[in-house]
Image (cartoon, rainbow, N blue to C red; front, top):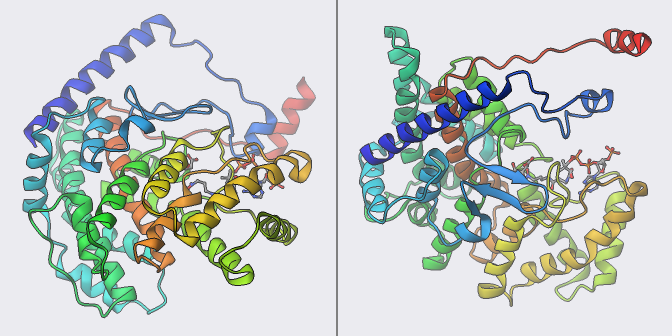
Length: 428
Ligand code: NMX
Ligand code: MLT
């Protein structure tokens, strides 16, 4: 991986120069003011973090380097990892080099399988993924070397080693979790000639899944890779790593955040929602029936999964990319058709719901992907967030490698009490 390592080094030099320049321009310049509403409102809209892997524009969505989602949807996730770490897409021989590197570093330890197989049968696959990564923590190259004593400027190099070791094991780990939890527990051997996503698709062992599942898996693993620094899972992972807890701890922590229904778990909940609609109204459900179901769901106090976003104020371009795939390959599929009908019905209802309080009535990344996975035989929707996690780990790794390379300090914002806030109001 010498090409990638060198390019990360170049990127770090570039980013350090940029930061020096920014500091010369005004270290004390105010970027964002914080209101009482923001302090109590999940810090929404507060600009208080720097993340150099990707950026989310409220109106055009995810940007990685100079590229939009549309530019990247035909790429391989391996190329996206390179892009996240370096700001550039790799040369054509990178995929082959990466494949060889993954072969050398692959192999989930037997003790990890022993732990996962010993868990209760109803353990959620996300707990298994998080725990699976955590079991391997003592393998951390960063931790071993940190204990020996290494200069701060070299931290990122060892974290990069940890990243490659984890990424290489992910297809086997994720597919193994699927087979332990939903299959007969036998593990399928990886194929050293396949790419990262292709191997994961193959090792699930789904009957008749073929090349189309691999194609969808590539797109899925590209689209979920990163979403700047403030989302729950990436932020958690970065905070944990900022204490110099190894990448294994940081990844596991980030995954625990991703497992929540307002974040990554919406992925599985979307398909569950579609299946409930299908079960109640049949394959030919009308838009009126869907509207009725949406209203009933909202009246019962639940959110509509796959709709809304903390940053985006338009239809998520990642949703659009999945819809494009669905129209090309799954247009006859009932679940996909219901996802299409939901897209026609939900935004208008959410626009007026709670007096127009929903900041974004539009679909997010989760609204359509489950219908596509279902079509290719991946019908255990409890597993979907694991795929989100596998992809998002690329972002966790890249964000932490760059932050360490830039020597970013431990993250520790200041908190205050109600009394402190009330005193400020009195002073004003
Ligand atoms: N269905 C019903 N109510 C909603 C929805 C929705 N899809 N989205 C927002 N609201 C409500 C929200 O619950 C809040 O109500 P209240 O103040 O009474 O608690 C109100 O609208 C204002 O919330 P927003 O400012 O619009 O959204 P916020 O930034 O707080 O939360 C989400 C963003 C994504 C958590 C929220 O839109 C949501 O819960 N969506 C459904 C779950 C989902 O799809 N999550 C996946 C996000 C993407 N991902 O994969 O991580
Ligand atoms: C994500 O991909 O992390 C989600 O869209 C949530 C977010 O960005 O807040």
